[in-house]
Amino acid sequence: METRALLEAMLFVAEDPIPTSELAEVMELPLTEVEAELAAFAASLQEEGRGLVLRELGGGWRLFTHPNARPYLERFAASERNARLSKAALETLAVVAYKQPVSRGQVSEIRGVDSERALRTLERRGLITEVGTAPGPGQAFLYGTTPLFLEKMGLRGLEELPPLADHVPPADVVDALERPFRSEEPSTDSRS
Image (cartoon, rainbow, N blue to C red):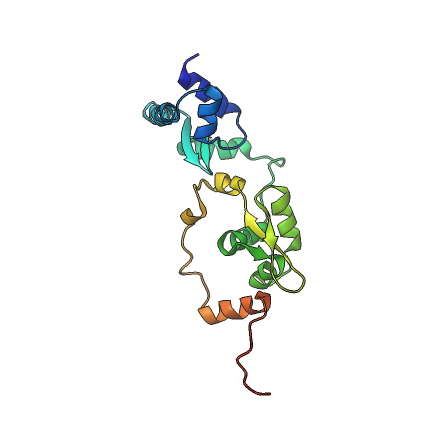
């Protein structure tokens, strides 16, 4: 079987993006040869106007449907069994994506409502995960996004998230929201 056919078969069955190094190892080929073949494969899919595109994101390579097929795929996928995220879950996901690592309390404070249920939903769907614990009393769990989040958003990394400059509250508001979750800072009060 040709290298491209083998790549296509592996990428077709993969549930997650596959790193180039893993593809090279499995195929027992030099990394540079696999990199070149992936780039050529991606270019040929585009040039031929195929229904699939090959993209590198989330730490590896994955096949996706062509963006122009979106309206047809949306109609095809419009069914009750393809449940979408609720507005609360989407808001919570945005907070986690931009503020990570972030605690449940911080998410709830930013949103102004309890976010525990939305966090559980996002965690169950594999879009967020616990990434550590906060210092200080209580040691709240901290959440961050997963590689699946990057994949679903079509991002190579978090640095590709769109800027929030027009939507971020002033620094004093952000400071007031974050203050309860910071570790104890030494007091500058000289009164005894």
